[in-house]
Length: 248
Image 1 (spheres, helix red, strand yellow):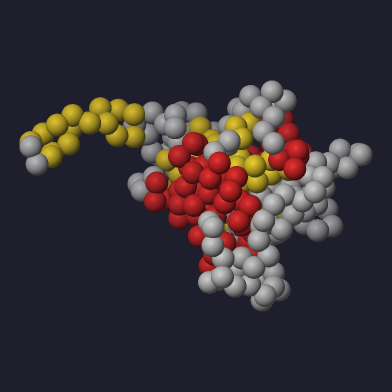
Image 2 (cartoon, rainbow, N blue to C red):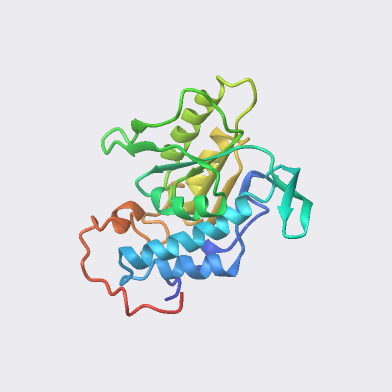
């Protein structure tokens, strides 16, 4: 699979033009696996595998600056000195698509709390609507990672971050928030960054193409589709081959 003709340059990293809180990955395996995700024959099982693999790489990058503290560990040779995460972490998937990224994040950060948010975009008003919120009353984590695989406008991501900031404001410390996505339109990245310049945005690939009015061309990353629908088999596509795909 290859990028569509005329769109190739739109996927190239352009760090000089991005806001400082936008961190697009340049890892070859991330770019390769996102291309595999766009294959027409990729069904839910194969897509879930690729989504988990890409999310693992992004988790590695997004967690690189977590604070550490010294600790003692009992080894076969006796007590030794080591390091562990200093603060508690929460993983916040935005349903449904964010659920596909959750397993990879919790495997990497095994002691993380998981808080679910359900937000959808109203088709008429185009405004985000919250329909599910399982944030606990007390804030006991210092860092929260918001997972939303493919924002087009960024409205849902902005709403999720707004909710977390309001929740975190009840704590006697500042809640640190990071946003992690597989792919995003340029407009989504710009909107999220503008609304929340203090929130790092870790993104696998940015689709930088837009129409003459500056609106992102839909769909972003053609072939990727609605991740939630594809993961749960509600996209109406039954023409896939789980066993015939390779090269991932």
